Image (cartoon, rainbow, N blue to C red):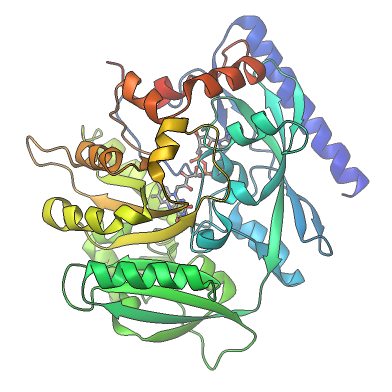
Amino acid sequence: MAHDENEAHRAKVEAIAAEVRERVRRGEPIHIQKGGVHHFVPLPGDRRFAGRAVDISGLDQVLDIDVGAARCVVEPGVTFAALVAATLPHGLVPAVVPELEGITAGGAVAGCSVESMSFRHGGFHDTCAEYEVVTGDGRVLVCSPELEPELFHMIHGSYGTLAILTRITLRLVPAKRHVHLRYRRFDDAPSFDAALRSVVAEGQEDFVDGIIHGEGPGDFVLCLGRFVDAAPYTSSYRWLDIDYQSTRRRDEDYLTTPDYLFRYDTECHWLTRTLPPLEWKPVRLLLGKHVLGSENLIRWSKRLERLLALRRRPDVVVDVFIPARNLRTFLRWYAADFRFYPLWVVPYRVPVPYPWVAREHAARFRDVLLVDCAVYGKRNTEPGRDFSQLLEDKTYELDGIKTLISRNHHSRERFWQIYDEPAYRAAKARLDPEGVFADLYDKFHPER
Ligand SMILES: Cc1cc2nc3c(=O)[nH]c(=O)nc-3n(C[C@H](O)[C@H](O)[C@H](O)COP(=O)(O)OP(=O)(O)OC[C@H]3O[C@@H](n4cnc5c(N)ncnc54)[C@H](O)[C@@H]3O)c2cc1C
């Protein structure tokens, strides 16, 4: 790391630590304000931004790229778009790159981001080697599997409730200039499930995910990708054409590596479907530059939510992780009771048991392969049926676990059957002894 960058980083971190100490002295609870957009569903009575904001938006630099060691050191506010732009010229990319350009390294650790390389590497946090954090009493602490193993593995999935990440060391993997995609179509859930498992077990692909477009013949699409040096042509889904729709029509495709990694960014997966004209070519031609792309779409949807004074029940946007052995059962239930497509399907190997998952619940996985079934945008207005709650209940019933990015319904008791309360309390006592950050359950659940 260059001397000046190191000094500048240290000064920023010391200023944040001083600010935290001042808030502690005043007895003021805090939340982390990282700048940019949040990949969170806005909620009525949101408790996630309670307390004074500590502004960490200045922590947005790539500090070091060690090409020989395939490691990179970044401040947490670096977006994945910036990270890929910095590493790809060296023939490297982060081992896990969440698909939206504006997701940051810090947010990806705190919120456990996954993507189509997760079948090999796990979540983004599983590819990290060291965190520097500012604790809730304003100390600067370095955690790694060697230095502070208990704390290190508690920081991911803590959603900003234990400490402020200020520096992250992450692993890079070799990359080429293009990605060759092949789409394999299946007629039903069992054949799709069997193919998904065998592709993961064979381990020949660089990228594996799936898009389920519906319940009919050919609707189950397995998307397989490999890095290649050269491509006979390249498609672009950055403006007029729509990536997820292309997976229905095409058998193969070539994309540049950044276009592949951020293939869902233009539509923010398929958020554009909620306003159909956004999928019309003339509209995209005229307005695309201003409204397409995840950051634009999230900003616009936030404004619209404000205009609509926040519906009590926002659309269902959530990732649920189902043990692979239960995927068929989940898809059967989904087709009968949920029926919202496309459904994004991402295999995710859990490389080490996570101490924040309660031991009894982790034992229920009985599988190191989980499948992230990501629901992006189901309307939830049916009287008497809350689809967000139904999905949460089904995930628990099938021994899975979900992200906390939108509405959460578990009782306190049930929540701490899934998350490890003693481990969380022990980490909280060391990292946030004054309790300036919200408690994990309180931050993500409405007051009862
Ligand atoms: C519409 C939508 C689409 C999504 N698509 C994908 C996807 O394609 N792939 C994927 O992997 N994930 C996806 N996600 C989930 C996303 O990865 C997580 O929500 C992630 O946490 C977002 O990070 P962010 O940088 O946007 O941070 P934010 O959304 O701003 O914050 C997320 C959490 O991280 C905490 N946090 C942020 N920075 C820090 C820090 N420096 N220190 C400590 N805590 C911090 C915040 O307090 C907050 O609790 C999606 C989510 C939504 C709502």
